[in-house]
Length: 184
Image 1 (cartoon, rainbow, N blue to C red):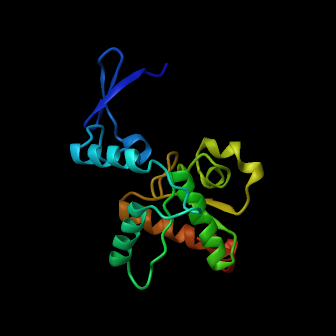
Image 2: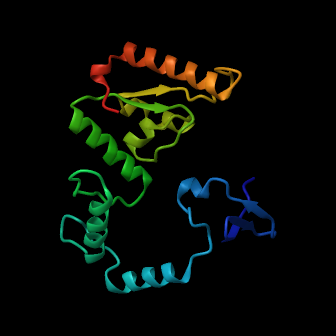
């Protein structure tokens, strides 16, 4: 049975019985600041919610989004000035998949086993854990590979040897798939 989580504080979650859990994953990397929201962040969120809680990008440009795009353009390399602001990780991965395929003209995307990329069709297809089975028949072009720490075997005795063998295997897999067909 899953615990009933009632609150979070710092890096911890607390269930309805008062038991404390360390959130090692930051809720799938969604709460990197932890559960204690700084007052300045709370204030900025409330101000934005009171001013303009949502703005569809195809309809207009919100000043806060324009400001962020300008700041990003100042720190990114080259002449990168266009940015997407997705609502979540799955949407971001969907956009990355589409952009890689559009930019390269290639279809194959390499992703790792034991990975999670989101709950929409393409991002589930990219996912490398049990959830991929819910989308596999409707997606194509995703090639799975093992990382240096697979769960049922070892690539080597040391991190270095495991990494070297993993990279050699990945190189063989890329050659077998055809490098000319790989978008990312």
